[in-house]
Length: 193
Image (cartoon, rainbow, N blue to C red; front, side, top):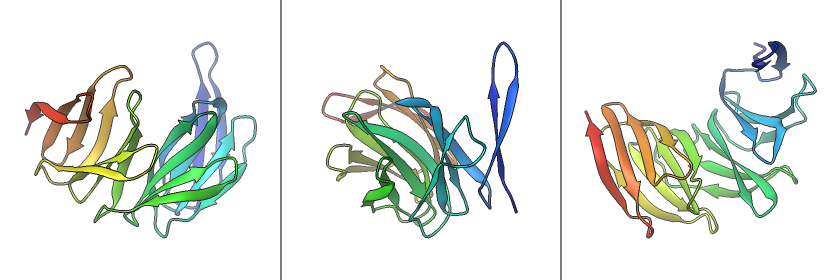
């Protein structure tokens, strides 16, 4: 099975390009904030592909997960670009885009990792999983700092707004919005079940 990605440029003229290369569903696409002509795609074929919008074929693939890849997010440490990936193998990998290698594997979830997010203001990485847990990792040391569980079953999504101290999580049984204070303490501000 050949999977395709379609790139559409708007608003003036709609231009479409198809990017082919994955052999299973593409679960997420993320543009590189340091180079907006490149983007990454995560697939259930277990790979992450790095693309340039000028070419229909991938520049390279990142292989290292033993199962499908559900989510990705870019993170920068200084001028160096890194990519995070979360997988059905229960791990999060940190990839050095320049060397095309995995530099760290984050372990701690007990089920499929469904979303990863680099916080825009604080040096933290947030990951969520079908195990119902929200994990907070130090973005510098990659060490697990905190585990939160709101008893709303599986966690599917993370949302945050740059410049805001609020983070939203989507669960099987509702949505919760939490507020982060300077010491990375989380206070619930809204719960809908």
